[in-house]
Image 1 (cartoon, rainbow, N blue to C red):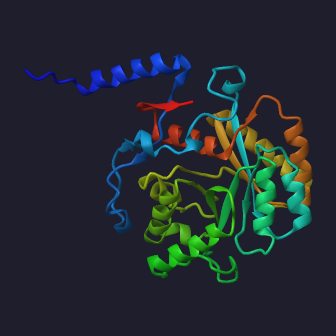
Image 2 (spheres, rainbow, N blue to C red):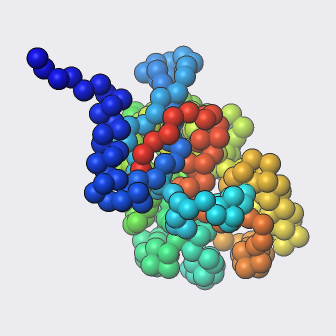
Length: 311
């Protein structure tokens, strides 16, 4: 008579074996990342229903706990904030001021400036997470996103070619966000090849949210790509007082929702105020942008299954 082991029993035998080999600390329980299921017809505008968990093998490194570890401490119960400075690459002096910020601030580089590769390497050496600030088509023809921008109407292979070029220009990236893109990010069909390519690279897609109608998050998550939207722009008005006002708004969002994401730019006023704010931050914790994206995904997808991740 053959002995058949039920899948749920087999799972717990694996847990016991892992603990026996590596100790209790070998496994940590953390909420899983969930993506909409049934997206095969997404480009045709059909709605998604339900959520499915990413398989364990598909969880990239930035979906794990943040750098402080997984212990439940008072600090880890504080509201979480992630900050990205984008439009990096053009102004070497201001870029180096941004690189001098705490390493918890992520830096997103435009692909086309000549100094981008060298500055991105410098930023990575300083400990910053690196993103590619991918140029995408804006609503207004007067707004030029720059060379090799992703445009509606381009065939998928050309969108992928331009995206690959952008990625090749920024060493050490762990994710992308859109530069402009108020028109492109509304178009689900145009976003599909982007999401597929990003999934191939096992990186995340932060929606800069340059339009309230952006479709980045649902499309990206449907392809298993960790994705969330920016909550606050810090410097639409380049004035120290206004930057401080936006940082206060960021804090309110983090208190209300447990996590919030801000985007700023390497402007003198932004960098001056942000350096002081980071140095005096109390009652909140700065987290890597990948951790904030995971937290927002979990909150927006709702509580579901728990996945096992190795420390």
